[in-house]
Image (cartoon, rainbow, N blue to C red):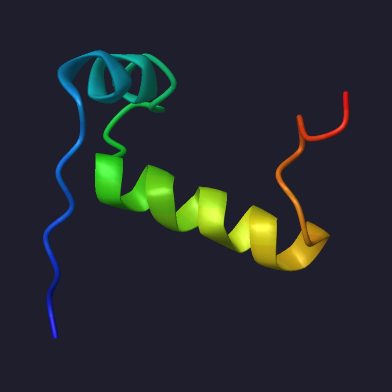
Length: 47
């Protein structure tokens, strides 16, 4: 099952600025979710 997520242009641009060479937004989001699942929170929470 595939789902579509719409991102605000500004947010998409911010995310794209963090992509590594050849990395897609989908891969970047998957990495963020994996970090969240491992840590139980995003890295910047509570800072």
